Length: 79
Image (cartoon, rainbow, N blue to C red; front, side, top):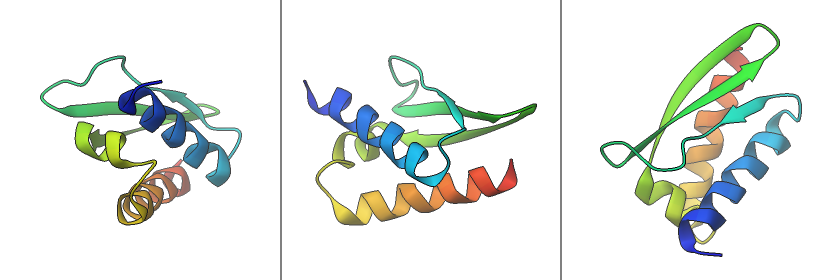
């Protein structure tokens, strides 16, 4: 598994740890080095952007993990 796939899997694990009922739609490739990710819970949908570098660094850097986890928690709370 390459860095990008590891990062995507880690992102999915972060979302599941915050709220297992949230559905995630993540594009296969980034646009302008950013991923536009859809989080859906029931009838509510929220979009967040995460940089390609953050996704790749997610499995290995605690600072990036903390930052992305906060973004996910804030987005899920808004659903």
